[in-house]
Length: 274
Image (cartoon, rainbow, N blue to C red; front, side, top):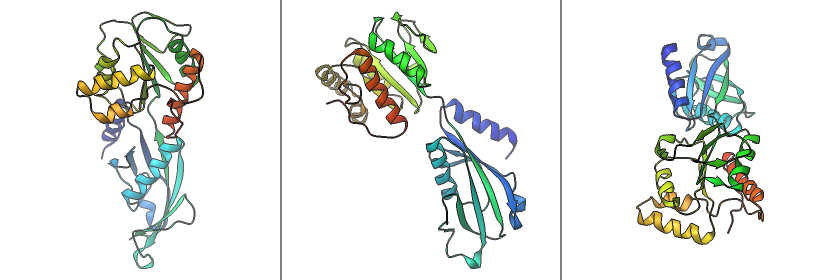
């Protein structure tokens, strides 16, 4: 494949907000010399979207790529291309986690540098207008935690400016183009809850929370079911929002929500509010 296709594939994945890793053969010895410079783009699901590394099975490459994306830091893997007669299968158990022995026809070794490309972490807040101390604290915490903070609110009262403010009261929420790395907090205070959540159910953000009492949250879930919203989304909705840390004040409630957001980012579990 051409360099143009390589760049196009990277651009397409980045535009969609999908995580991916680039694997490059940076050093070779023995019969693997001809493989130096080979590249592959691997999606977050572990599938090769571009190119490939001869002698490095896609399943093993995908597994290493997912580890790199999970950790968020690059790593170099040393691949030993064993002659067919000396192996007992396509992939042998490695001595260390950065060594892998595979069946090959040429022999030799190669070092593969795997680099993660992660989409920006966005925190999207959908407000109802006016002063909301929880919304205000979420903007502050989100920016301090290096999230790209987007506020959709026609008249917010905020002490800290978000990275992006959408204040058009007629803004179509479906235009947000939410990605699997986004976290969304809905602070619409009842009147628009169900309509906003219905729109969000058509996308795939990593985390969706509704700031509401337990009673209102149950009522909203009932409305969503009546509207035909998929049960998987209804069950995944975090409401009452936030981890169970005993939060009482607006700042504490915002902190409990950010605890859930960060835990979801790292695929960790925290106790939800009852």
